Length: 252
Image 1 (cartoon, rainbow, N blue to C red):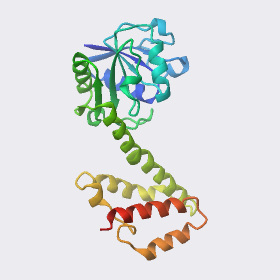
Image 2 (cartoon, one colour):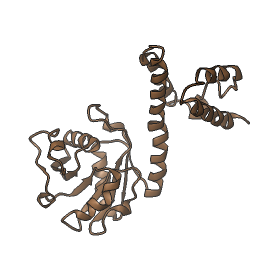
Image 3 (cartoon, one colour):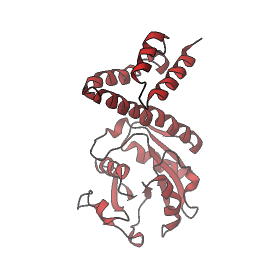
Image 4 (cartoon, rainbow, N blue to C red):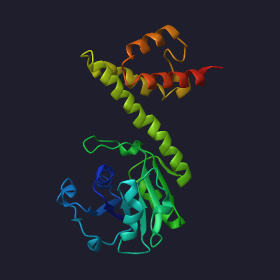
């Protein structure tokens, strides 16, 4: 049985707790958070603490905090020579304090507290300084996911950048679509089948093969009509930039 302590009580920690508790090979023995209020979302059966001096002995400690807090928080931990990992996609493993053994346990997914996810399909990106720690992280990852992969900090930074494009930026496109529809009192639900089909297509096609639309086919008239509709919109410039980028990419 792998014993873990979660250091943080946000979205990532909440979902990791649920995934680990569903496994027979790992147990969360404690959750730490500076704010007692945030710990209330965890069940009463799990031990919680707001004090670093009361953190229990475990096989590994998982820092699930905002990126900017990882380095200073790891330095404040009151123990040494333990395996300490973080869950960030963009922070290098070296950010963890040298007084402990370092590692990465990065689940590549977007998390919202009230939205359930299937961890078995989530890639778990791991990294460690020592072979024995890599073995432990591999074992831990496989208790909740079928997709565990060793990835260096440099590779993970590029992966996280790509994830921002396909997740955060694409979701902002949804917000723009919703804003434009609301001006005509139309429901965003009208776009949901299109969004699902766009996502489904990349299961069998490359993104380049799946690209459609007026920019790819250089439909000048349609593009001009769209720009006319956007003449007073803050999104006009973005439409022009994206249209140019798609044209440039797909023009021989």
